[in-house]
Amino acid sequence: MVRPRRTMPVNQNPPAPDLATVVANLQRQLLEQQQETNRLREQLAQINQRPQANEVPPQNVRVPPVVPPVPDVQPEVQPE
Image 1 (spheres, one colour):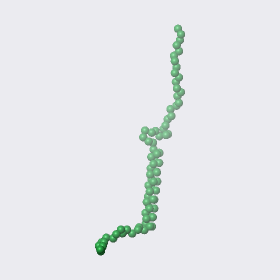
Image 2 (image 1 turned 90 degrees about the horizontal axis):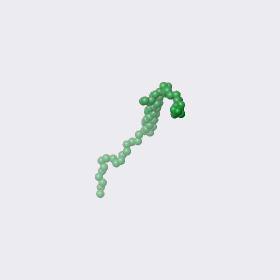
Image 3 (image 1 turned 90 degrees about the vertical axis):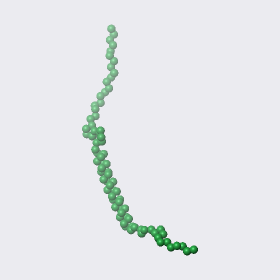
Image 4 (image 1 turned 180 degrees about the vertical axis):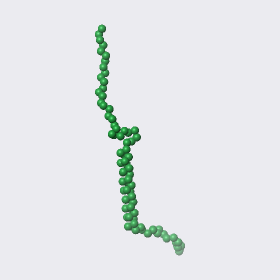
């Protein structure tokens, strides 16, 4: 029995990319990620330096003085 000819190539892989191009692309991606990381770190530092909602900045914080508790004084009963 004769097999019919195939008109399409079987499992033909595309040519492998140039290794130097792959390395250059990975280095570029790594550099972009490092720059983004640095930018986000700077933003986070700025956010952490700002007072949060309903928070008084540290230089304006007033600590109330310590007041000793008032002793429970019972009125003296004078004998009649």
